[in-house]
Length: 446
Image (cartoon, rainbow, N blue to C red):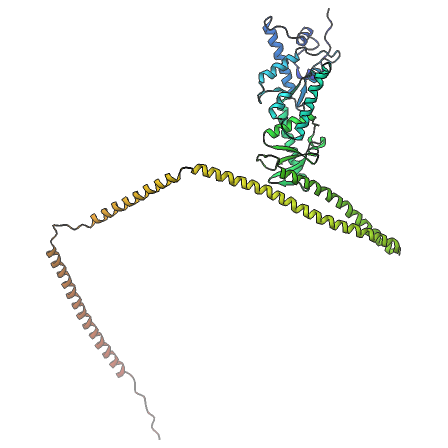
């Protein structure tokens, strides 16, 4: 009687809860056994392939899972706890999953090399150049010492790659917002890569290969750029939703000046603290009547003050230079926009001058024709009737004029009579008022 298989790992148990690992040893051995020819038993072959394909997909979808997963790591995760038995056909299942995706971005699983080629991680840039060098060195070593060749294949979970890439972008923007004085040029922040991807900020630590492909994915999407400046990698991240264009030489120079500005500013803070401390000691020495010590402290404080003033001037010059570089970059973008707009306008108007002239001529002719038609209509409205008798018209007009004259003469006569009567009536009223007025009595002297 065959002994039952050892218990599965906790991860395997959680991924496959429907399998009775302890009570169904025949099924467990079937699942762990290698794939046989599909023609011999197609149903069993498809059942086993479907089982391990679903198990791998569930592992890839688990939150907190790795972005880059090697075959050996996955085999160890899906092995049994005691004797380490693992599914012999896992490698075949992984290869079929990759082939089913055909390298497309919708695939659940892709090889690491395939993703690197897709993202162009071996193109230009110090970071990607270093990765290319290590790959070439590895191939050379494998040719020289073939017995040390590592056949462990590495795969990329595309879903986790997208999740981690968005997490890196969110952390970078948050870091830029929380920074005291971040470098902002033309709507883009410039941040040190090592500080952005620190374990205490990114949450779960990122392996080198994971960081490589996640940053490559963001670069492919036009949402982030990476460039080494003065021996340190820097990220270029948009402050809004717009695309991030190439990390230019002008921006690299601005980053270098910004680094120098930060170092000088930090040094000034330490020197200022030292100067304040010397000033306090100087007051204490003067209070204790220690003249020689006070003179020595004053000389030190003076030297620090002179050095601080010089550094402030240097910082002011650096700040002016940074502003000039930022303005130059923004002006370059504006000019590029103007050029694109001018080219578009020129191309859209190409060959339309003659067409516009022709249309203008046709419109002019139409307007003149319209005016002629309007004039003809107006003249037709005032044409006299040839049957109309001019003599009768003149007689009737004369009669109307005579009647008007007679009417006016009669109205004048009537108005004269009325005025004369009103004048006479007014004189009579005045005479009556005079008669009724009492006479004044003249006193007689006695």
